[in-house]
Structures are given as structure tokens and as C-alpha cells.
Image (tube, rainbow, N blue to C red):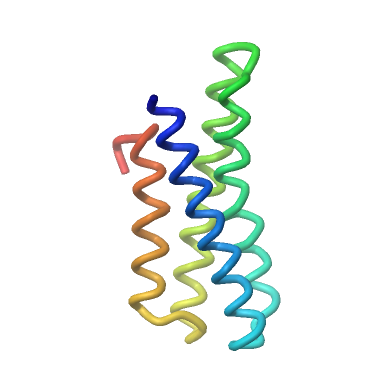
Amino acid sequence: MRENQTYDKALSYAVRIVNLYKYLVDEKKEYVMSKQLLRSGTSIGANISETISTESSADFVHKLSIAQKEANEAIYWLALLEKTGYLSGIQHGSMSSDCTEIRKYWFPAY
């Protein structure tokens, strides 16, 4: 059950990341940081998806570790995009909050 909830949230988050990327490219004409955000933000769900059929517990932990690192990176790019004026505080807060929620499923310390 927990895997499915996390997967669903990560997939929804990836859709939001893709839409934010399109906004940043089309409206703000920002191409570099937004591409990094697209890669890290969509990779979270891809790695969580891979945990569903891992062959060992070590592989499971490894995939979750990668997902956590990608989430950390996505939060970094969101903060940088806000500090450079490409995202509003509301946009940054909403996207970061959703990312943190996904991390809390597997890493409650966040």
C-alpha cells in the first residue's frame, strides 16, 4: 500500500514538474535550471517505480536512496529558481512542499 501511495504521489509530482518546466521555458524563457529541475523532479518517481520490482532488499534501498537524492536536488533547483526570480514564493513553496511530502513516506526525518 505504501509503495502505491508513494508511486501515485511521485507520478503526480512528475506531471507538475513537467508542467512547471513548460511554463519556465515558454513564459520565462529559462532553459538551463529548468532542465535540471525536469531531470531531478521526474527521476524521483522513476526510481520509486523501480522499487516495485527490485530483486533484493539492497536494490530496494539503493533505488530509494537515489530517489531521495533526486528529491534533494529538485528542492535545490526550486530554491534557486525562486531566488533568481523565475518562481514566486508561492510556486516554490507548493512544489517544495509536495516533494518533501514524498520524501516523508520513506524518510520520516524530513
